Image (cartoon, rainbow, N blue to C red):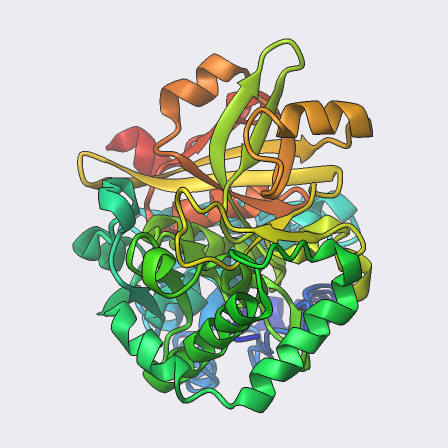
Length: 498
C-alpha cells in the first residue's frame, strides 16, 4: 500500500554545555520512538511507512536547517517534533520552514518535572500556532500504552492526509439518479484534501470489457462456483453464467482502466445505463473492495456504488487510517426503535471480507450467497450479494457539505449478531437478497437523523474514531462526532477562534 515517510526530530537547548550534556539521552529517546513506530505501524499488506530520524538533535540555526533539508530530501510528508528538555523555541522555524505549511506536525513531549519537555513543547508549538500552523500535541511517557496509542492514531491520520493529497478519483459515469450528495465537489475537495477527480463515461468500460480475455473471465466464474457451490441461486434469467460472467468482465475492465488512467480509487454510476443494458455492478464493486480475487491476495481498491464521490472519499481515508483494510458502503435503510438497531443494506459494494473479516476468501464466502438481481430495478441482470456482517466493533463515518464547506460525521458503534430467526425477520422487511449490517450506534436515533448528511454511510471494522478526528483537524474540516465520544471531544483552537 502507498505510504509516505515520517520525519522525527528533537529540539534542544542552544547552550553548548547543556545540549552536549543531554545529547546522548535525547538521541536515545528519538531512536526509541522510531523503533516503536516501525514495530507498530504496519499495513495490511506488510508494508510500513518509512521512518526518518534527524541526523542530529537540533541545537542551533545551522543544525535546524541541515536536519530540515535532510528530511525534505528523504521525502518526509509528516513531522514528529519531540521535546524531552527545555529548548530554544525559535529554532523550530529554520527547521519546519523546509516543509509546506499544511504538513502535519505532532508535538510530542514527556511529562517529567526534572526535564521540562512540556515547557519546550508549549513554547515552541505555541509559536507555530501563532503563525497559523494546525498542529497536534501529545504529552506522556514513552512507555505508556495510552500515549503510544495516541501517537499511532496520529500517524494513521497523517498517512491518510498525506497519501490521499495527490490522488485521483476515477468517476465512472457521474452521480447516479441525480443524487446531488454524491457529486464530486471539485473546489471544496481540492482545498480540503488536495484530491481531484476525472470523469470517464461508462461507455469506456463497456468497450474495455470486450478486450478482457475469455480465459480470465472463465477463471473468475470457476472461482465463484467453487467457493459458493449451491449458494449461487441460478434462475435461468437474471442470474446465469452469462450474466455473472458479464459482472466478472466489468470488474476486469474497471481494474484495467484504473491502471491505465492512474485512478487510486473509483466510483461506478451503474444506474441506469449499466444496470439496464450491461449488468448490475454489485459483484464487480464487492471484489474491487475485497483484499483478494481469483488471482490471490491484492490491495483493496475503494469503489463506491452509484459513483457517490464523497462516499468514496470517506472510504479512501478510512482505508488509510486502518492501514489498508477494506471499507463498507451501506444505505441508511431502516431503524428498528424497539431494538435500538439500524438495518443498513443496499444492492452495492459490501466487500465479502465483512462476512467473517478474514483474509482467506473461503472463510468469508462460507456465509455469502449470490441471488438474481431484481428485475424491477436491474433489467440487465447479474448477481446481488447476500450475507450478514460479522459482529464486532465498527466505526461509521461520512463526509458532507454545509453551505459548500466540508465536514465529517463520525460515530462509534458495532455490528450485532442476532439469532437467525430475528435476522430473517428484519432482513425480510427490506431485501433478503442483499447484504446487511445490523448496527447499534453510540448515539440515539434523533441525533443521527438530525446531522447525518445523506443516505449513504461508510464503515470500518474496529475503533478508528480518534484517527478520523485527527485527520479532519489536519484538513481543517470540522469532525462531528456523535454520542458519548462527541461529548468529550476537545475542539482545536482554530475552530474556537474562527
